[in-house]
Image 1 (cartoon, one colour):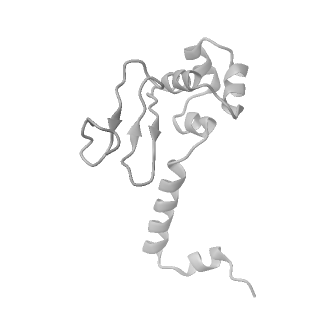
Image 2 (spheres, helix red, strand yellow):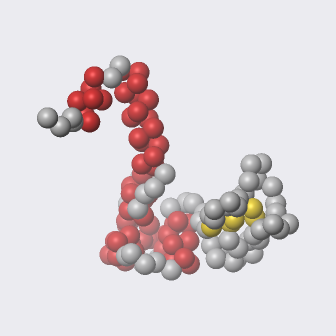
Length: 123
């Protein structure tokens, strides 16, 4: 007979279950759709539409569009009260924040521990 993961979790001690629930929530929070982000920030489509100077239907279409211009995404995030940055990740290299895409005037930064400014991106 197959084992149900919910049955296994129910049998775990309460402390362990809470730890698993916290970690699951953390993982879920690391990746959200635009709509989930807006809802998590307790903003309505109407509020975002007003900030973007578009109608509510435009926000709905923006949230469901698969391919969005970065400039549009930057404006959407700004309307939610945030700032957008774009980070490229490569094997065997520190993550690199890309300049000139999310915000004008940003410079390229390597983001290793300590968040030091990079003089070289790749050695």
